[in-house]
Amino acid sequence: MLNTAEITLNGSAVKLRASNWARQLYAEEFQGKLPDPWTGSLDRDGAQLFSSTTKIVHGEDGESSVVVTVPPTAIWPIVWALAAAAGSVEEPYQQWWQAEVRDECPSDGELAEIASVVIDLLMRTFFRDR
Figure 1 (cartoon, one colour):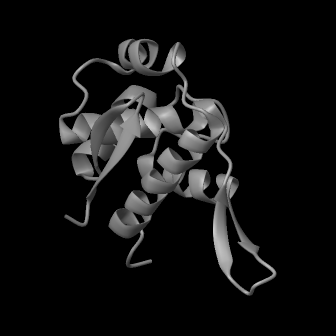
Figure 2 (figure 1 turned 120 degrees about the horizontal axis):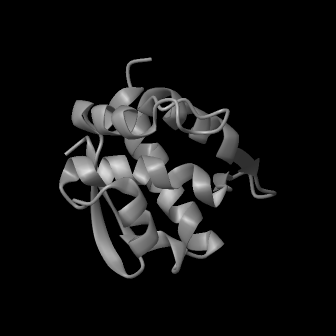
């Protein structure tokens, strides 16, 4: 499906779904509660994640690649909302974060891969007509 993807978090597959339900979950949990520049709007924060973490690097061979550097705390609220909308997560954000992320935070490479999947999912679902 166009609006689904899967990531691996701590060795487990986690299904993600970008949907209006994900937007609603994200807004209910985070609107007015996140530090600047995050707003609690999945669309705005997804675009912010893309613009603040992604750069295109042109190699000597003429090939381009996308390099993603992610502040670890920036992506987890978005991952939680997308996973909850897909039914992969049932607990509230703080409980999920403490159980899945806090003590076993992925490496920078794994985090970049998760961010790449999340950004691609958001771009092809919410921003494809813009």
